[in-house]
Length: 358
Ligand code: NAI
Ligand code: MG
Image (tube, rainbow, N blue to C red):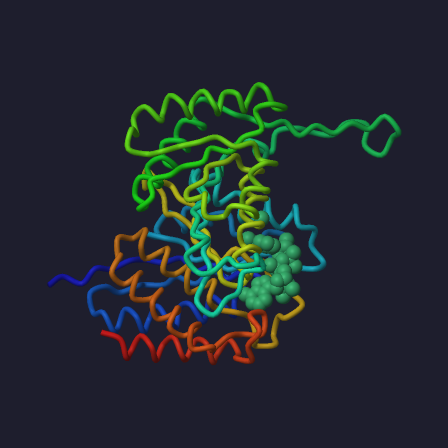
């Protein structure tokens, strides 16, 4: 049989990014060797705040064309204490998401074995969500400006942009994702009572698109009520779609309710596959623990699994996630999860679980 080859662009970034991405690449290599059906060719890019300090730019001029050569991008985190976060974000992550038109951000969340939800009585299986975030426009389109800077009459605008094509494509994607999951249940989140232009458009388009997905059950929720429902009735939720800003906030709440920032992944997806999609753990560069060897690599492993799924390696993706679950269930956990294992311990245990599984 023909060996399938994938080209992965690795962008570890700052802080613990390089630590967890190195761990992820190690695990991926063991997985590929074990399966024997695919190989990953990895291109390493040192785009980071370090590079910004040295050269004035996070990425080289030809960064986007380099990335376009890849089948997927495996990203760590960016952010440094001495570089303002809006410079970092607009210098690296957002240009990649926008220029590769990764308009759908997905964030699976569930309670992992060995992990405790802060919600009383909520166990593994009670919280299993997929949040779909519009990733190309809305509140983060970068539209706006400042005038009379520093003067008493200073004014700043931050305009949300909602286009029919932008909303329709994310809605179709979200209904499609909901359809792939067993419960086929989608909650459309807006704030269309207060935001009465753009988000009323969301509601209208949701109702239109729903007609093409008669097998998907859907409901609507205002974003404030949604925070309440996530805490009070987590079982009532399955797939969720929301705007760039709303889903950004809801997905951090989701991560907290699932018990840790260190385990969850996210994918920035171009569903049409014109460009590579980018996969990253949801956590940031965590300077407080950088270099200590205790960063939780589980987020990076789950990210790798999500990336494999996107590449069509669904069997390998499942094998990887079961190996990680097995290790967590065995109590081999980093300090953020209440354990005493190091990044290297967890990585070694997952590699061993992979070698031992069949
Ligand atoms: P953070 O996610 O880096 O850290 C928050 C807390 O969670 C810290 O106490 C950290 O030690 C802990 N934590 C995070 N990931 C962990 C892991 N894998 N294992 C163990 N503990 C972990 O968020 P924070 O502190 O708000 O931001 C730090 C920097 O990261 C900022 O510059 C921020 O802009 C950037 N950031 C970047 C993101 C990205 O690249 N996508 C996402 C979030 C933040
Ligand atoms: Mg966020």
